[in-house]
Image (tube, rainbow over all chains, first blue to last red; front, side, top):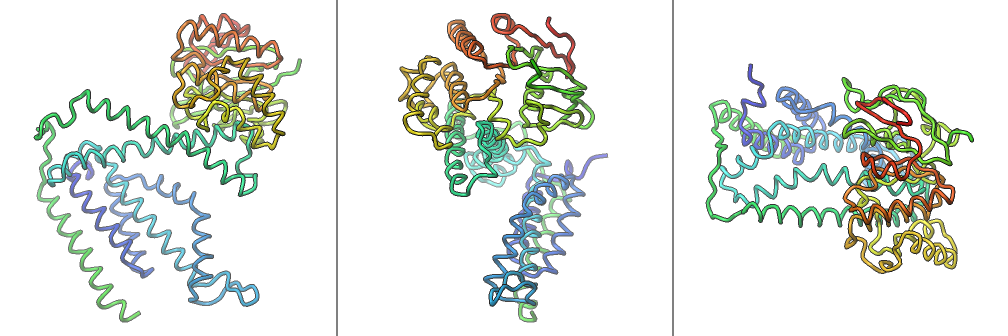
Length: 252
Length: 221
């Protein structure tokens, strides 16, 4: 039996991700966000996105969550005050809610993006090209997707290499640590420029854009299910936004 | 002499169903040069990364100078053991050779005179004097390898782990590297060299540990 990820066209997946991410950005109500979050988990699981990996990545951002809760509590005076130092509000119920909204948004965006990872970068480029997006731009997007994890790995190696010089990066003063970050980014940026140079040479040697028109062995074809999914997701997204902005916001 | 690095039944896997390193135990002394040899994918680099704490074993223990490396930070391990990556580009942090050598001493707040003296000695020892003002990203692979080892040595480690130090080097540059490493050994620095370059290993290492599919299949071969 074919998997749902194999049945759906990459363009359908792009529309799904765009719709869900749009809702995550526009909606500012925790109940609706939670519904979108649950829906995203459901579709990501159905399509075969790696939810465990997303949960691990989000789990590593716990400190950001705490920071957001505190910053929101200090600057947005809403909800019951939970912790107060003198006249200074350190933690409020409103701050916690905004922090939870932030995590929900991040989770929705990252987990919906894993839907795209169920198609190869070649299929995604082809989808964009068949949408009449210029091949150069589609190729650039695919290169960015391809090299992002490589840059991440390199950054991790450099951070390790700095520590292996005998520097306790997480125990030194913040001023010294910031100075070290400058040295960490130097090899990563130089490496990225080098990679770009090598890639452009490789592209030239393989006659990239030698002819104005390209033919492709891979041609994508949308099925009825793709049209249905695109229509359902688009209508749902527009409806939720209209309902939220026209009706619900007035009630809140 | 007591073991400087000691591995006790170390097992590690990247994926659940396949162990990259299987139940490995051995000891390395500070006054010896050991070589970890074996074909690609035999677990040599993984074992090196386990020793310096970049990876954590699923089972077993690794001791450095008698301390469990699980209880040490990378910084604490790095101040005892210098590690040369397969790709030296990721461990060159500055734009000129002289800045790279000064990096760790400046960070530790060493006096200017001491930094100058150490740099001058290291430039001579590693045959980098002519390149002292060169941009690090314009260096050849062999020069980068030498610079990376030289910069590691500025931190005064007691032991070195070198991962494929001869990759991309021609015979002449290999001979230069052998000469430098032999000088370091004479000055009391122990080392473990990870390589499948048999000719290089025969020149430098007395102790050889052969790995295959994550296991030690031969010692002192």
